[in-house]
Image (cartoon, rainbow, N blue to C red):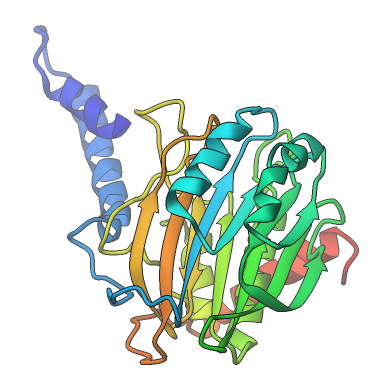
Length: 314
């Protein structure tokens, strides 16, 4: 958007002579703008849908709400009101500390199963569900201070699915000056999903946009699908700045699922909007996925190895 605005401004005549430098700047801006439009286009109605739209089924479906609450946000009532309004089967909130655990305690009556990992380092996790959890793992895949979840959940029809719930560290100076750890965690979870015979979902704030190289590498190596492709951007961040928004919160599906709905929900006082999705286990395998070539498989292995080795896990 910024590049397009700048390009228009360069093209608007303000008087004076047109220099070679002006032509160069216009060409460079045009190249950058067209490149970025090409990256984003698959996430508009012009793109091809990866996942088929299906009616929601209570028996074979699951309704999930994912959100980064922003640890220092204290508007717990807004999160509770949203949950009461849309009534999801499973809720996964990140950046949750003990204040958030206490602020959401009323949900325990409606959601009898909870996994609580409140932390003060902005990597706390809270999960609430009315579905039966058959197996659960709390993992520290890359960083010993950053937990993630791996759950086997029973749908109402008795089928078992796996949910990987993650919140890797962002590549910013205050966290990591490189994306090594984030990329490694995303790709490691993708590897787990690919090797898992059960239908699976990957959910959470991945601190990465949907069209990034890492996310595409994840999709190719995991052979999962992005429900936003062909439907819209579904921007979740930054909730406070309307002009600067992009999709940071994700729900990826294995090829066993159809999509009933996906929606960015109303704000809860955080810098992220929550996102909800209704997935239906169809087992028709008609989802369109991307596949990694030899070089992309090798690159994914190297990125995982680099992330593990930097944290003394390999």
